Image 1 (tube, rainbow, N blue to C red):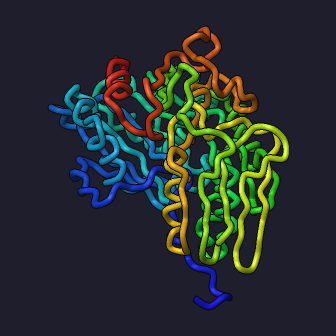
Image 2: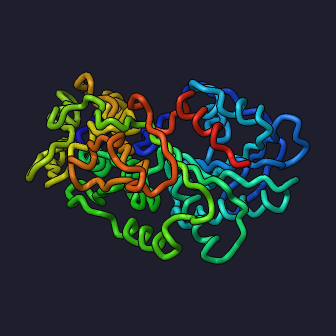
Length: 399
């Protein structure tokens, strides 16, 4: 390999679970609705001849357009047949997809609003709607509903649901963000981290490999806009689901561990570490044949090991880097926290270590910004539909 040619890494997602291989096609929807900047796929409930008792769920973050088969597969075939159980109860499922999932949350909220209005216009009967979404989708629908109420639009929603949505922000290790920007031959990685939605979602963000972690200005503007419309919808009952535990138990990932070490090839000497608390913490040393960067953080909590929905962030990054040379991945660091439980349940902020590892079982319900919530009995993959969480939702459908 010529020295001047940096190897190209196969692009992968930092802010979403990887798609399962060989996903079968989804069943043909009963209706497909074009939306501004998106599409809605409609599946009638059992014995329904049209949209009668709608449950509207929004897709989350990724790059590119939403995939119906991936959405359907995740809800139906990965552990709990949520769609089957929902439709068996006479509920119609409406899935919202976006033309560009990494686009601004504020822009994609237009598709969610249009979908809600279409469902209301076509509904047979007067059952209140359930509206919400997975991951970023919970924020899109939260904003859309709050804005509709500010505009005095009758949305007809009885229940709002967020499923492992990062109300306090999501976490991608600064080490991995630095790596994304360092891989110059694979610009898609940096573009993903710097996309509008990623900047709005991430609790701390760096724009370049040598940037200083901060709340991105786009996130600040998004939070200001959310506050402007009232922060939350006030009419529906607010439900929140966390894929992480609520007893303060982390996922076992230790701080300051060399998660990825590259020992040969173009990136020989590159090391990525799990997040440590304290000042001047070197979380990555990025080395190429033509450049070198040192990534440092100050006073960040040990978020990689926090209770929360997980992504296989270090594991996937390490595997992809193996095309360039020998890579060692420290066992036990492959999957890390992506959406801390406190973020998913809108109860504490992420600035302090003690808050991130709070025993939520000991908190008063009054501390939570939602009306009802559930956390998982174990830390499970981000947005994973489990029987424990899915059955809890089904017991709280609007009448």
